[in-house]
Image 1: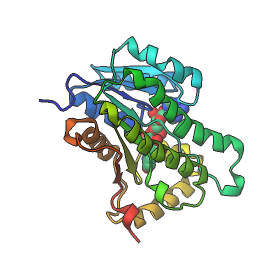
Image 2: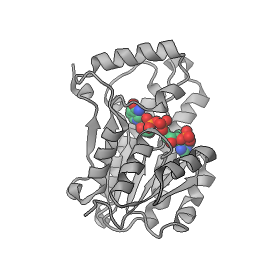
Image 3: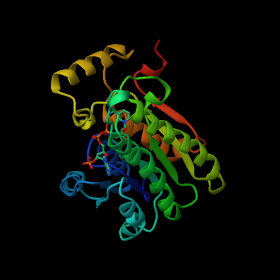
Image 4: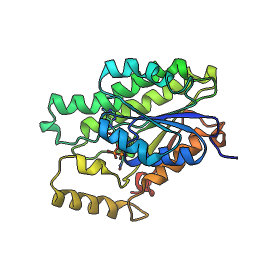
Length: 250
Ligand SMILES: NC(=O)c1ccc[n+]([C@@H]2O[C@H](COP(=O)([O-])OP(=O)(O)OC[C@H]3O[C@@H](n4cnc5c(N)ncnc54)[C@H](OP(=O)(O)O)[C@@H]3O)[C@@H](O)[C@H]2O)c1
């Protein structure tokens, strides 16, 4: 029996990287999957590549009008959302003194404000016993120069996960966080770093990972499947690091 048969999963930011890999795995496990993304062409291509059972909605997490209308658009596809993977996010880095309001807002609006209201607006569609998964980062627990706005946005998301785990427990809705370490996805190419600097940065990060390699999106997808399914029936308010040991290494 597939782990998610009969379930509907919504994955925000499902057009690439971790979200796309998770959509692939959830479909394989029998779920109906609805992905979101802000780029219409990327959403269309992702849905075609995902195949049967996949649906796409063009929706910008940073746009409150889009977030407000998301429940109605989902209702045209499914009457319920059993699994909500709040994954859409950006990693926009800059030295603290050069972090202007636009960079601050982009990180916070997408990674935290959008995530906050996505869960709030979709809550009426979540049946009792649903699973909410928030994609944070291991950087919440350590300092990385240039990551002040990004890390703070994810720290706020981790905090939200803990509060919601308590508030929603009455309805047996479980809320958990996945904290990825360095995962090979297109995210890094969107940071605005020149290729040489990016390669140097990646090599430096990899050297500090005990398992000496970047993780793959599928590693996060497998963890999301655990949290989405009844395998994790007694897990709520947790944060699972998937990081090759990076967050505990001295
Ligand atoms: N890769 C890592 O090492 C790593 C580590 C820790 C945490 N994470 C977290 O993992 C999540 C997924 O990132 P990824 O690494 O898989 O990167 P990715 O390949 O760039 O995927 C990010 C996804 O989010 C979507 N997205 C971005 N802004 C959006 C918005 N305003 N509205 C709707 N969708 C939006 C992107 O689509 P469009 O841009 O096309 O709209 C894309 O589908 C992020 O929250 C990230 O912070 C990643």
